[in-house]
Image (cartoon, rainbow, N blue to C red; front, side):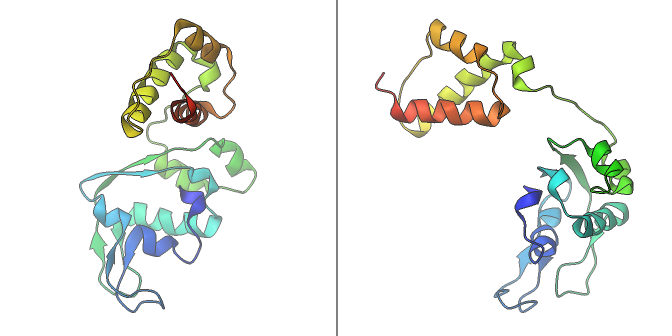
Length: 177
């Protein structure tokens, strides 16, 4: 979640750091970019990223290189970047909250996913998926009745899939059958 990374740890989290680079750097740490080399890196809630960090991210994406904090060694990285946001990034560009050049860099293929309330046919599939996941986690065997599914399909889900997942987890924990 890009909005949850503090300014102080942003570069360390994404690019890694060397032992002694800052007070709490007690050992070398590989960053997310290097870990994702030859694979995919998912950045969630990209719209929450502050402008200064957007510039740093853009440079890494353009150059396909990173430098761990406290190092002078440049590391080549080859990643497939996948980003998600609930923000309208074009509006954020217009408002001065998001860099247009970064939007161009990340917007190769855009997939717009409508809110869950507009994809009612997905609710039973997702609800049963999360029921299975949380049933195994909490060692419970539960089923959703047709009435339960009907209630779930009529709810508007303002929190989208995350809200549905949380509701199912809560139901699994609290359910007596």
